[in-house]
Figure (cartoon, chains in turn yellow, cyan):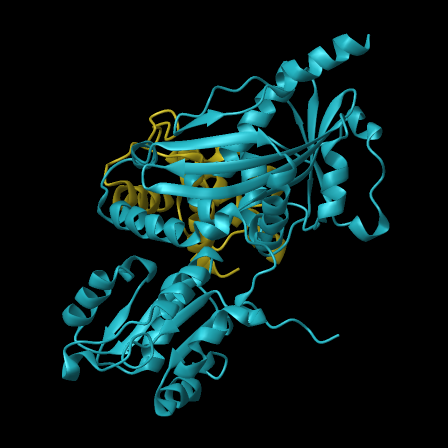
Length: 93
Length: 369
C-alpha cells in the first residue's frame, strides 16, 4: 500500500462520493441522508455503488461487509471505505 | 457422434439479389419471393433475430421493406455505404452477441469474403441457400418456447426502454416505477418446464449454484409436495421480458432451503432478484421458517451474492443448518447463506403477483394432522 493511497481523508472520500451521486442522480445529497428511505436509490443502484466503491478506492467489499446499511448514507460508505483501506494497508505492512 | 453446430442467434441479410431479386437503386422495382418471406417468418418464430447489411440508400430500401410488410422483422439494420464486415460487427455488438453466433447471407462472393476476412467466425451463406436455411441444424433450436417466439419483440421493447432510460432525469426508483413493471411468480407446470430448462442453460451469470437441473429432475420435483419449482416472468409497459427467473425450494421443518435461484441478466437492472428474495423472505417469515440459500461464488454471479447479502443473508452458523443433508464432495465450494426470516414490505418499484407459499403449506399441514 503506497503512502499516497493511505493519505485519503474522510473529507475527500465524502466529497468524491457526493460528487458521484450528484452526477448520477442529478440531485445533491447530504452526508447523513438516508438514500434508500428517500427513494433516491434502489437496491439495484446500491449494487452499482458496491462496484463503484471497489473500483474507485481499490478495495474489495465481500462477505459480512456487504450489508445494505453500509450503503445507506454517504457517511456510512465513507466509514466502510476508510476501514477497508486501513485493513488492506495494515495487511500489506 | 459429431457435435451439433452452434446455434445462429442472428442472421444478417443482404438485400439486392439476396432478400429480393433485382437492384433497387437501378431497377426501381424489385421482386420479393413469397418463399423468402416464409423463411423470414419461420426464423423469427424460432427466436432467431434477423438484421440487414446492405450497400444501399437507407430511405429507399427501408421504405421498400415496409411496403413489403417485413421491416418489423429486422433489428439494428445497417443500410448504407460502409464495409459489411463493420456492419456485421456493429450489429453483433449492439445485440451483445458473440460473432460465433452471427450468420451472414449475400449473393456476392466478394462481400462474404470481406466479412470473413475480418471475422472468420461469422458463418456466411450464398444467396441461393436462402430457402435451405430453415432445414439446417444451426438454424434449428432444440427448444422453441413461448419466449423464443417473442424474442424479437422483447429485444425491440428493450431498445425503446434503453432509449427512454437515457433521457430520464431523476431518482432511480422513479424511473423503475415509470416502467410499470409487473412480476408474475407462479408454480411451474409441465409447459413451463421447458422454459425453466432453457433459462437455467442461458443464465449462467445469475445462477446462484451453477448446478444445471435436467428436465427429468425438475419433472420429478413437480409432483413432490416438499419441493416447489417456481418460475418468474416480467413485463412492463414496453412489452414482455418473458421468463426471467427460476427458483427451486425444498421445505424442511424449521427451514426453507433455496436450492436454486437463477435470474436472467437482462433484468438485473430492474432489481428483479432483490424483489424476488424479499417476497420469499416474507413468505418464510409467515411460516416461521429460517431460510438457507445455496450459493456458489463464481466470477460471473457477483450481483447475486450482493443481492443475497443485501437481503440480509449471512454466513453465520445456525442450529437449523443441521437439518440439511451434507454437501457432496464436489459441492464443497457451495456456501450456505442463512437468514432468520422477518416480515418484509411489498416491492415499491413493481407489482408482484405470487402464490401464498406459507398459507398453502399451513393448509397442507392441517390436512395431514
